[in-house]
Image (cartoon, rainbow, N blue to C red):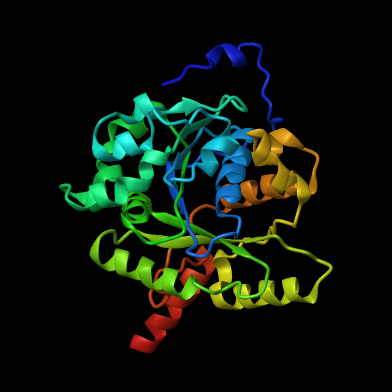
Length: 312
């Protein structure tokens, strides 16, 4: 692993610290997914991770998108030849060898993506346990040894073997949805894919959070989309919304999360609030009859009581 401990010996961090949050009992493993591009998927992966790191959580971001945008925004090396998630998937490197510490926080780490991932879909087809390569590499000793509180995986906007590897490793899926026209386009197919993976590969997989991004309070459209999403997904929709923000768009160009680039900006503060909400409320698991969509503990209890009454 690239060691940047020297940077943190004076206790400083590019990301300002927030009030510490209670740590989860075990690592929360989360895939950030949406089969529609341009919805804030990578931006949300990086900035939720940075927000949690600011609150004292130890966070790993795994970049499985060949474009490597999450790696860029984390400020880590990902030029061709860098040991990356590609080598981890094909068994040529351990996660420790690929992992780098982000220069922006002593709590933030990244397994970067390189352009080599572009050919990984084809290479994985002939490999043993091709859907579980990431699971086999990371589960167990690696997670126990490093003590991560959260692991986020940034996926390409398609359901290939890279995304399937992410979804067989995690339990939770967080879906960012842009508050624009055709916001729910592709989400139905994503739900079907998650249901299929639950049925055949990973029965623990479920949608634990929906995050509304690029919200413009000046428009009726944003309000309509938010209402529609909340009606469709219910409890899992985070109350915090991410506003449309120039600073959020600019930050990756400087190799930074927005919390490091401009911590006082509306976008940065919104991501901190979303991180705190996501961590504090815990994992929302599905109940009987809700398919892959999670519900709050209160809703789960109410549904269980209703089901019991129907059986009686």
